[in-house]
Image 1 (cartoon, protein in one colour):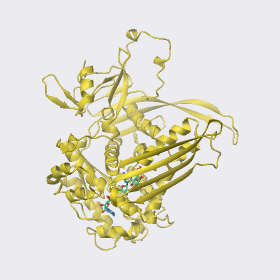
Image 2 (image 1 turned 90 degrees about the vertical axis):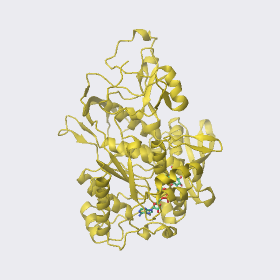
Image 3 (image 1 turned 90 degrees about the horizontal axis):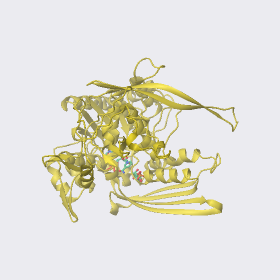
Length: 568
Ligand SMILES: NC(=O)c1ccc[n+]([C@@H]2O[C@H](COP(=O)([O-])OP(=O)(O)OC[C@H]3O[C@@H](n4cnc5c(N)ncnc54)[C@H](O)[C@@H]3O)[C@@H](O)[C@H]2O)c1
Ligand SMILES: O=P([O-])([O-])O[C@@H]1[C@@H](O)[C@H](O)[C@@H](O)[C@H](O)[C@@H]1O
């Protein structure tokens, strides 16, 4: 295998200028024709030509976190500073260097193709298209607690002490803006944190202040784009009330009337949408009430959610995909976890736990519904979710799962897992992926023979489902929870927008009679390889490359659009 730091795709289907990359893509689908209640079907192959257009200029990106002073917010902030400044730290086991492990965009690779020797060539996912580099992201946000980010980081107890010590000078000047606090939506045990709240209960005033905060942040930080992301405390579900939050008009009127059922998270979503800022919900509550979704559609602003998929649930979406697609029938999934961070404290309250229980429980539905050999229409594995608050373990969440399945000829298979998830160290890189990909999708448009010119993707950005437990999807479309299908969706949309083919793992070239790889016909797609095998091993050894003059270049490519890509 060979690893390259960057590549360009050439071919008659690719048109590139300094500003724009346009790619033609023949999208093949099957339209299934069948009579109602019939079990016979006919699949007809349908090809639709898409042209994808990507604006290559990456936005100067500002990210405003709601709940900035929380474990996730402070951990992400410290991690970005540590990576940008290359702040290493000492531990009992020796020195540690910053990294971005757990970010699918920054730390996973894609197969670009095979070279003339038949070797697979891999590149970083973030090299598929120009994306925001984490070093360039400007962070800000709100919190109902006034602690500065240095204090918040220390309170979170996530980073090693020596790293905390080294980060404090860079974080103590960062302070969250005061936020909206409506006690009824989060556990009463959170009241002690609420010392940084907007006065009064006039929701129109609160909305306008949040909107002003977004405008001022964009101006003062000199960013081109702002994305608002909720990583604040899990709220109880909002009741969807006709006349209150069922349409965009009713929702805006309800805010003007300071209706009680309008949650802080929905207020933030409305403010973001009205300011043209994409809004992402990292928690399980139903922020996106129907009126909010309709408002996002009206304004053409991306929304995505719900609930970061970080540890136990992420693993579950792999296990159930494996079992069901192996023809094995899961009959019971018992998920228990305990955690001791403030999130866990909030989740110890029934209404907030219920929000999380829903998002953690629905993650198997797509896989179960896909296999009527194993499951009857109304059949579903027993699925239990338990969350307990144990202060001692702090952010180091323990997840214990038991998967019981029916196997061949009446057999039973039971898999028991114990997963210690450093909650915030698993969630923070997902926040990075969510905002990097969201910024990219804001620069991609598409056209087909049936569109009126180039159009943005649907305002419900369901491509981001990989990072979320309960992916919000456009009305009437299926929810996909299987983790590797979700990842394949992201990789393939980026591949086709870059000019590469979909990765279908068919690999026919390896299954047909041996072809002398040296005689492979020269494809019309040239891959630029600029790193030899030695560098490849060195890259993997320490994530950096020694170039010709002995100096070390960062393993994170800083290729910018328009840079002349080295040619071999
Ligand atoms: N692995 C994970 O950590 C993980 C995974 C999935 C989902 N989540 C969700 O992410 C969220 C954050 O997790 P965390 O561990 O950082 O929790 P946390 O309690 O440490 O942080 C939440 C922060 O939000 C603040 N807050 C509460 N209400 C607010 C409001 N109305 N406006 C602004 N700030 C507000 C709190 O003061 C706190 O600082 C939670 O909802 C959690 O369920 C976390
Ligand atoms: O690990 P995972 O299931 O993806 O998600 C986590 C839950 O297991 C945990 O109970 C909760 O406190 C975290 O906020 C997060 O939701």
